[in-house]
Image 1 (cartoon, rainbow, N blue to C red):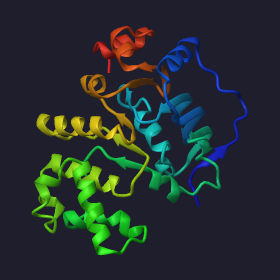
Image 2 (cartoon, one colour):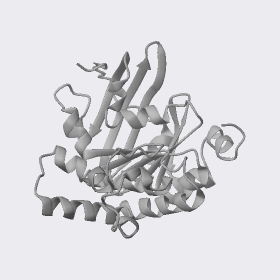
Image 3 (cartoon, rainbow, N blue to C red):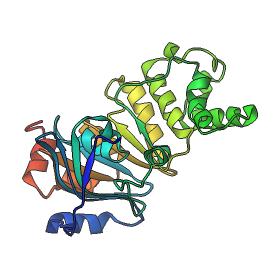
Length: 279
């Protein structure tokens, strides 16, 4: 049974004038997600407050803000991983391709097949490189060896790590460097053919060279996937994202085109954070 209580919210979504203008300015394609009046509580702690946020298809959306502002909590609502926390209560709607994922009839297994996640620290399974990538397809019933080999190779190529590991597929994944492990985890995510990839500070534990490789990979992946990335690295957000949302104290303070957010933000709190005055 889910640890989350979902409360119906019949209020209309209300955007501020600036947020509405920014949303209209950046929209050129379809919305893969739309969050409407989302509120979330951990017990009595009101962690997310009236979040209204669209996520565009085949774009990179960066979520920025200081520690404890609700960035990772929001990310985990998009694939309902937040349900793993006891005592969480949620109201509002999260529409994925027009369907409310908080609806009790929406199967979480179906959602997590379509929405993959890459975590802050690389978390390969204690298995071979091959078995790490083949794990998801096997769970979904694929047993044909030739097909599994094709999926593994294509996924490793998609994660820009095939040339580095093609001769050691049956070695333990723990023998890879941190940056390689993170790209392996991205390959494992790609193997289930998701529509969306969620990334929770995927380069925070990596060296600059590995960080650059992951950033280049993200830029390549956005042609085929919608990507939402939480990052503390302002330069990273500016380099790789098309749109940026600034979170503070559980609220979306500003959302818009990344160039606009970083050059001429509308809210002084955004400017103060980006310029390093706090956070």
